[in-house]
Length: 306
Image 1: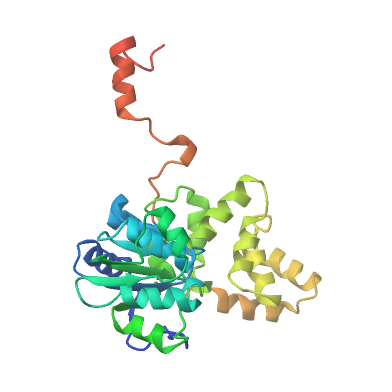
Image 2: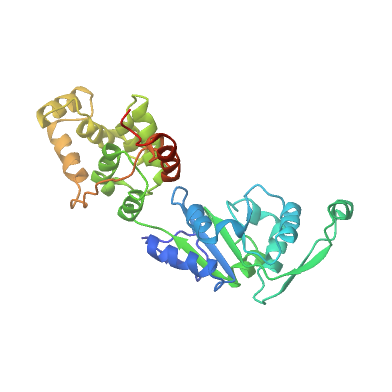
C-alpha cells in the first residue's frame, strides 16, 4: 500500500488489527511512553485505545484548547493521557510546546503555563508541575508543520494504521449484525480503496429506511460513470439476467453491449472472499441481562411460560 506524502519519517505502517492491538496493549501496560496513532476515520482507533487503557486515562478531545489541556493534565497527572482527534490541536503552537514537554523521554516531566494566572489561581492549579504521565495521540492525519512537531515525533512510536478492506471486513464481523449488508460489502471488497466501518452502519440505516443502500455504498467507493452504472445494475435485484442489465445500460446511454461487458469483467472480484456468518444481535435485540433474569425467576418462578 502506498505511503501518504504526509506520513512522518520513521513511522511504522500496520495493516492488521492484531498488530495495532499489540502496540496499544504495550502502551496500556506502561511499556511505551509516547504512542502516535495515525489512520483514516472509521477504523476503530479510538475504541481500541479506550478499551485497552480503561477508565483511568485522561481523555482530551480534539477541540480542547492548549490551556484547557494544561488544566486537565494537572488534574490527571501521573495517569495515562490520550489526546484524541488531534488534527487541529497539533497545529496550535502553544499546544505543541506543551506536548513537547509532556512527551519528553524522561520518566518525570515538568510542564508549565505562564499566562492566565488568575484562572489558574481560582482553579488551584500551579503554573508548573511534574508528572510521569504516558501519552497516546490519535489523529486522522498528521503533518510535520514545524521543528517542534518533528521533536514530538522523535520522542515516541509513530504508527500509521492502514488495514486492507478484508481486514476491516473481518473485524467488523465482531460486532455488526446485518448479514445482507455485510455480505454485499464482502462481495465488493475489490472495489474499496478506503475501507471504513461506518459505511456498514450507514448502509444499514438506509436499508432500514427503505432507501437504495447498495447504490450508496457503490458511490461511497468512488465509482462513477459507466463503472457505477454497471455496478449498480449488478447490485439491483430487479434485474434477473445479464440481458436485462445490458438493455438497461444501453437505454441509459452509457454505451453498447460490448462496453457493458468490458466494465463488468473488470468489476468482477479476482477471488471470492471467505463468507463470514454473523452471530451478533441487533442493538435493539440484545440478550437480556442474566442477573435480571435471575431476579425475575426468584420472584415469579419460571420466566417465559406465561
